[in-house]
Length: 210
Image (cartoon, rainbow, N blue to C red; front, side):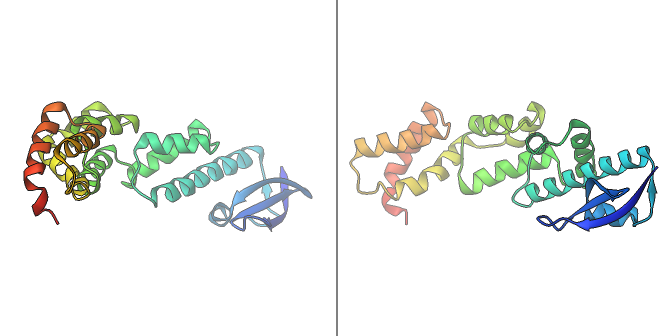
């Protein structure tokens, strides 16, 4: 058994508590873990208790890192796993964190895929093909992607994607208008037929756009 002889707040990261056993620094723990486990000077710890504490700390740090990541925008399960791996967490801890996040509804690939599609449709429309590719790169399963993007209307998306570009091309000659708008839509994944229809429609409507 080892006795806790000091619990000292870390100098650089106040949320970490340095644990000294038998007069020597042994390891550091998240302050929340120290409080939750009720650690105190004079308490004796067995090797198994130390192992459980460090494992609990790894989980808590993983949850904190995941919460910070998710505070910016929703993430796919694969994104969270990849980020935690890059931060040095082991696979067991990551598995426990992902399980907890799913239980709390904070990681849900179905909801994430829907969010991603709606965000694209609202702010930067893309083709169904490109939206599928983006979600696939984020590790979302094919069947989840199918349900999320299957109702994307290519013509409507291309039209909405074209509007801000056309506002900058209103005075352009037709050849320049067609080439630049076509390239713009092609980069967003639209096919030849959709691009041609959209270019023709936008050329007719360009003067009416604000």
